[in-house]
Every structure is written in structure tokens, then in C-alpha cells.
Amino acid sequence: MSERAEATAETNSQIVELRQYTLHPGARETLIELFDREFVETQEDVGMRVIGQFRELGDPNRFVWFRGFADMPARAEGLEAFYGGPVWKKHRDAANATMIDSDDVLLLRPARPTSGFPLASHDRPAPGATDIPKGIVLTTTYHLDGPADEFCDYFERALKPILIGTSAQLVAYYVSETSPNNFPALPVREGENVFVSVSCFPDRAAFEYHRAALAQSRNWRREEKALALRVKGDPGVLKLSPTARSQLRG
Image (cartoon, rainbow, N blue to C red; front, side, top):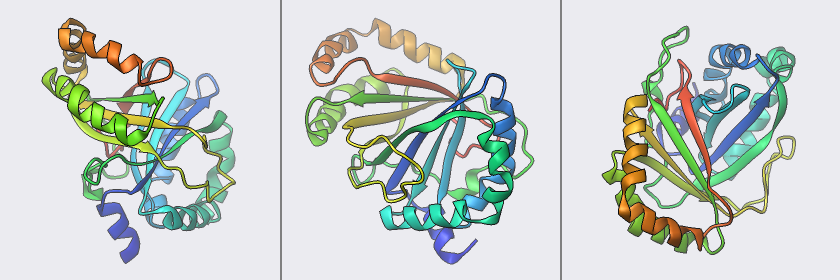
């Protein structure tokens, strides 16, 4: 890994993609095996950061992952290097054959200077790892009806204490990055105004405890009404199970 790539992988990514792929029935395990084997170190070698890759537990045909970049210029440079490089060219047909749609992508930035993913590259299991982590990663996407900064203030004041009080480990939260997509070959959902929170749980029992505690919380029921006035529609929730080589593991 180059000095620049190593530095990028070891620091919080200032630009993050939340990528959701719809796959052909039965193809998810094929893509995961290929991804974990071929597309982790090869992306990080050109300065990008593979933060985590997941099975979506509510949909057997959905694969979700986070990819990070130091900044927007580094994003363009890294994507050009990887998708123009030999590894993607060798395996792209096999990867693309698993996919129905790969364009559901949100481009994000940390909502606060300290609210990005706090991961280091050495946390990831080595190539060939097969043990699936027990953790659950929960992402919630709020489509905002006002300025992102105002919603972030509200989230930190009213929602964050309740989530932490019901045993959620809130690891990161992001808002939309409004810069134009600087790698048009990979579409993103431009023009959206979102807030994305990411919480981790050590296992499914801990997640179910959190969900039950939240449902019984009077404070949460009260804030649900206030929340509805600040967002458009219901939040988008992804309940994610990390792959064997995911760096973000719950």
C-alpha cells in the first residue's frame, strides 16, 4: 500500500458512499465471496477505504456497503485507478452478473468533525477469513424537510440520548455531500437532503433488547411526533449483518 493510501485508510473518511445493490435471486453469496477476496485490499491500495460490507437481513437479494475517501478529489482519483485497473477489469463481468441495480448510492459527509467512522485498517480480518460476525449494524436514513445542521442539532439534543439510553452504540452520523458527482460512470442519488445514523450491536439479542426498550420508551414516543415534522416520510432502515471481512462489525 502506498504512503498516501495507508494514511487515507487510517483516518476518518471525509466523504463516504452508502451503496445498496439489488442482486439477482441467489447471487448474494457469490458477490460476497468475490468482494471479500478481490475488492478489499485492491481498493485500499489506490487510496480508498472499504469501511464495511453487509448482508441486508430484511432482503436476501440486497448487498450494502460503505466506501470512504479522504475528500472529493481523492474520490475521483481512487475510482479512476480502481475501475481502470487490472483487478476490476478481470472480475467485473462476474461481479456485474450478480447485480440487477447498483445505482442506489448516497454521497455523504460527516455531520460533525467527530461523527465519522472511527476505524483503522488493521481491524479487518485477514484474507480467507470465513467466520461471520455476530454483530448487527443498523443504518437509519432520514429524508429532511429543513436544513441538515438544524436536524443535526435536534438529533444530538433529543434523539441521541434516547438511542444511547436504550443500549445502541452510535458509531457515526452523516449528512448529504452536495458536491457534484465527480465520477459520472458511477451514478449517485444527487439532489437529496438526508441524515444517516449508524448504530452497532454486539449480537441479535442486544439489537432486540434495544428495539424493545425503544418501543417502551415514553421519551421516544414523544419524539416520534416531533421527528415526523422534520422529515419527509418514514425513515429508511437497514438491518445489516457484516460479512466475514467487514471492518465495521457491530
